[in-house]
Length: 594
Image: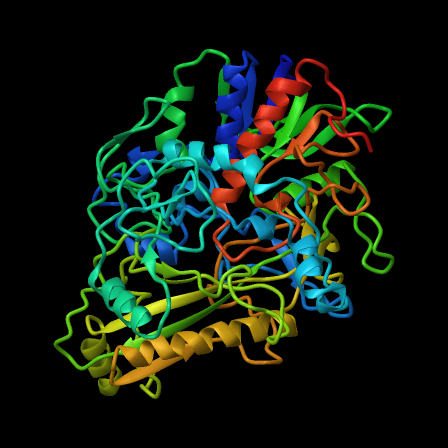
């Protein structure tokens, strides 16, 4: 292995998914020389999404072609600080992406904003329910930025992705047809495209939800409903409901991704460079430890490379930003015993329960037809859209019937009591495959003093660095929330008049199980916030301690939210880029006085 030093650049970006691509586009527009380093391989619609090879469930969803190589680096897990931590050796509960596009290449296309009260969740709950309502040990904190400040960026992202949807409230005016999400915050404009067509199963869910007095609406979807060209000149083709979204590169240029919606524009500018197969080891700091000088990475040939840069942007997947900050000495590591420090603090996941309604053969729900971000949702029990006072828990859950395409290997549902194999299983699989409706309760997971990440003292990756160690388990608050909302959804299932109902949800006392897939939506570890004592980043996503280091992605969320994180993470990236362009470049300094 040799050492070499590269020519300095203005900006180096670590990780090239949605947020890294956004920062690259924004900062090249500002005239800066930008270099993006991605630890995985170069990926794009071709060849990674080439038809028909891409619709191969065995390769992509069972053997994890677009996901992280666990033989090179992984994580360790334990339920509490007294347990031994063991490595996550095989993808199960969540699926971290790897390669150009990151999780933005294999995501489903669920494109949500956030509720205003979730951005100031601590203040909101204290004002409405009182300080004692927040349980002991729950470390809620505000984001430090308002919905009104982020709204132009939410709108820009929707136009960049070609999001299909039905707005309910635009500039204070409710849609003439009265459809859409009645709980949504005010918007400055409509979605750029009309909503997708509603699959049959989602229609059945919508009818039943209205019957029990709820407010279903068509989901906003980053799977385009019509041909579309975004503000960068990038083109998309209409979704054909093939059912191969989550876990796959879209062969039809229909699902928004960094590769489809931003990369074609970046390829045309001379002040941008992308280097795949470059694993960043650390952010390099000067002698004062208050300024970054660049990064050190291992290239595809195994060489250790020093890349000088004036600005470093950490845009790795979720918790990996915390790992990068910890190994680099950026910020103070979190100590759960004292509550001091913030790097690694406020790790959040998401709860998940599923309700399935099974019908007699002949219903013909055709679940193999689907799109990852499409369907019918309801927000009656999301955020604080319902009265939490008598219920005694914090948080909520959106619910959706999202027919994303039932797969022939992993997607065969059978009613409760069905044998695991044999003739009875075969009959149940045949009877159920096109005769069921499934919908999910996708809940927020709150943050707690004893749920955090740090560096594992025992296990190292193939580069000799300590693995990130998760200390995480479910808490009573989140399980009670999930039980309540799931109970309301069972009423919807009964309204469909099925022959049987199956429910999958956590029980009180259940501990986090790494084996079955749940969701890939981790948040936290490098939390943003108004107080440097409890956050890693200020409201502009700038490190409190090293002013030329910024971080983007869901790792900056100080709390968990009910929705998928992509919409909020991308809007925050544009928010941070605006601050860099309009404030930091004119006078490189801390943008908020500590």
